[in-house]
Length: 382
Image 1 (cartoon, helix red, strand yellow):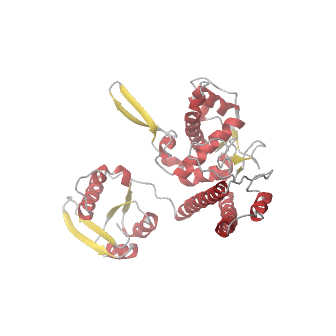
Image 2: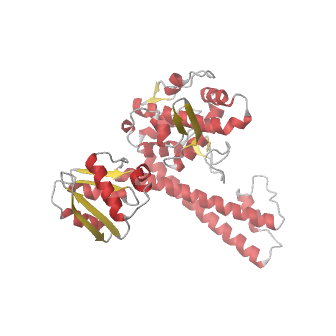
Image 3: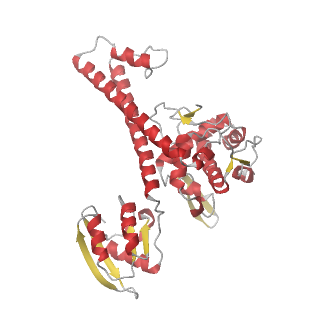
């Protein structure tokens, strides 16, 4: 499927091609042409932009609609000969053989929720870029901000606006950067208000916020992307889903482990790593996990943060399935923390979260990646 062209291949019940067609037009034209086909139909296509909308439109026309995972269809993307006609035939055969790797298609409300979460993340990245440009401007002029509360506080912005001795071009850059930064901050505030309203309608968000170090931004992102926790057979699969497990190349007695796979939504993975740094500060149990992995080696701190993030998301999965809130237990540094990790939660959620719960994200900017230090766009107490 493409924005203006789609290749359709139709097989009969014996797996033979009976129709091949190129549809000129967008998704609505695809639906129109599919509606003309004799039923009953089973339909498959690769996930791409607009896959959810197309799924909702095709579902009433077919007894089964399968959305394929592009990254797992090696038959297509690893092929040396690739075009729309060949790819369409392969997708049809995968559907006929019932071996199509599927993706989960959430409801329209969850898709809109995810879209808002990603839009906020993109807006935050824009704010980071603006702040970096301001820093670059000052550094190019040999200036350093001498503001007690920091350059991005109200006093810092006033200092920046009143800065004298700038040339005409530098002053223009400064004014435009300040104006855009103010507008981006306003947008982020509006986005967070809208997200808070959505999160208020989901008790699971408040449930996950009982974990020390997990604020509303992390909790809502996990709930939105997990959607239905029962679609995971084991909660350890959540670590794989969010790309927090290592790559593996194993054969016989040889087992090679590499960097994490980084599959799944990068926004959630980043938030989970930030929550891991905060949970390490606020929870004796999580601190025990962290220290056991580092073994006193400071070079392993980022490795430990990713490992703790994986454990946290597994705990979150168990909490979502059982409805139980986090209960802080004793610090554990033994290697047999799997069972206690799975349910470091045994208190039913009643009323508001405990006092030590983190309920909001620190709005400090960062340029670092998913395993950055504890102050990167982290989460704070409200």
